[in-house]
Structure formats: C-alpha cells, structure tokens
Length: 390
Image (cartoon, rainbow, N blue to C red; front, side, top):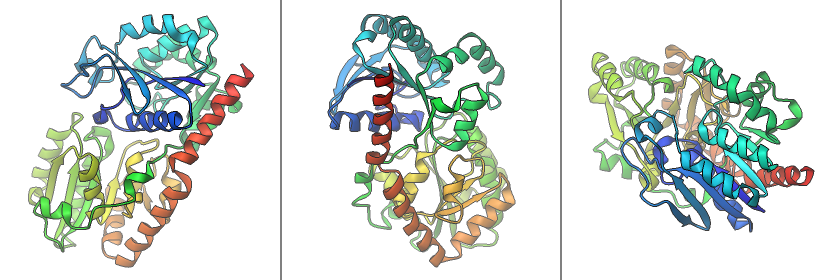
C-alpha cells in the first residue's frame, strides 16, 4: 500500500511529546513491512527551532516538512502549514489510505476536504484530543460546529488508544462499529541493553543510596506537577535521603513550578534536569525507584511504558487512560489527590520486594502487549479493511 501519514509535528520534534514518536515508529515499521510511507508534517521542532529542509528520507520514510506561518503559534498548538493543502490537492489521489494524527487542527481540515473531494479513505487518530471539556473548551466547540463533526463522520475508521477514548468518540457521535482500539507501541530494541544502575546518579551528583522519585514528561500545567511537589514535600519529612527529579522540556509551567518548590522549602531536594533524550533518558528511568505521572488528564502516556520497560515501578492518577493496566500490577493508580499520591510513593519507596515485583511485571507487560510488532499488525489490518471496503 501507499500510505500517507499526516501529523502536525514529526521527527525530530520530540519536544511536542507523545504523538511524535508514535507516528515515527509506526511509519518505520510499516516501511519494514514493505509499504511505501509518506509523511506530511510541519517544520516546527520546538518553541524556537524550525526544520531547515523541506524534504528528506528517514529510514525509508519520505517526509515533507511544510512551513508554519508562525513557529510560536505552532508551539501553542496552532499549526498553520498552508502549503500542505496545495500538496494534498496535487498528490492525494496517489495514496491508498491516509492516516491523520490529530483532530482539531488545519492539517485535519485539509485532509478532510481533499480526501472527500477525491474519494480517498482516511483513518483518524486523535491521540487524546477528542474531549471538549478540557482546555480551550469554547474554541473546540466552535471548531466542531464548523469542521469537527464532519471530520469524524467522514472518517472510514477512528482509532482510540483506550476504552476511555473510545467512549469520548461515542460522545461526539461516532458509531461503535467505526471505532478501533489500538494502544501505542514501544520500541523494545531500545531496552535490550539498558545502562548500568548508578550512571545517572553519578552524573548529577546524587548519592548512590538516595531514593529517587522521577517525573519525566513535558513541564506542563495539567501534568499535575503541583500536587507532586506538595506530596513530595510531605513525604520528605517522613523519608530521609530522598530526591525528586523533574525532567522534560518547559511547556509553560517551569517558572511557576520552581516558585512552588521554593515556597515549599524543598529546593535542595529537587533536581531540574531539563529535557532528556536517548541514552540519558534511559539512565534516568533505570536509576529511579519510582516513576510518577500525576496528570489531571492523560490518554495514553508512552513514558509510562518506557518506565515499565526499564523495570521501574510507576504511579499514575486514575485520570490516566491506562490506569486499569497499572494499578496493583506494575504500580499504583491513585485519585488526583495529594495525600493518596504521597502514600503510594511512600509505599513503593519503603518496599524493595514490591519494587522488584512491579518492575518485573512491567517488563513482561510491554513485551506481551505493547511491542510495535503487535501494534502495527493491528493498524495494518485496519488499513486493509478500509481500502477493501472502499
């Protein structure tokens, strides 16, 4: 098949979080299976940087980068790649299937218009952006009246990451038979030869015997970093020699978070590392005693799978779409509550046997359920069914 992947951001725009590595790994695995894969994306890399080339090939993936009118607007998730529409008008009939990654953005509008006009089927994957009650609620409702409902209605299939997201699609009027649940995958080859324990601690001057609580994701208001800081301030009074590591790119909340840490008088117990990628990220997971993601809302955080693949116990809130596969299996899922979060962290830090059990179960979980071989086979089957029915 000739497959077009459309995503607002793509390799190497890792600072944009979850969907970027998902689209990259999906595209790479599809190429390995013999498909021709083309990616249409924008030129944004992060808040200050743009992609300089307009076309390149990455591991067999043909990638076209379209210029955003404003890179600063792109960082705020307003993607404006007008040139993409002209390219779609010219090339869209050459593709067997289009996979749209996103929902309320101009690339999705462009695909909907040209795909419907030329009779090309498309699959839509919102990556957690379906809900309207969370952030920018009124602009989302306006978008839906003009484009959103039609984009969903005309999709051949929509892909939900979890049962929770499937219900969100249904609430937007998508029929049950159009929804397919496919989780994100994880590249297990990156976790075959993990760094030795202690390398991250040595680099950052952390005592080898010091317990570490790791947060590794975007530093963003709705990631729950405020209750993590408050929970940590409380537990650090009960547990001596403990460190909170906060790693990730600033997405607008770093300054308020640092002020909160100062106000809580825990500055000497908190380490801000900035973004971590590649081997350095793995070192952080391996040396952590527990990974915590206390989000206000989260659909399917790949970072949780990465921590599991490194054998690190995890704690999430019950507002996370994969809370059911975490709780009491590879860690804990707690209410969005400072006291519950503190108690769960203490329970993990104080029990080495529990940490070991959660760690081994985590490795088994990602191997059996979330390898890219398993995930891509499901996506490939969706493509085939859509093109066959079309």
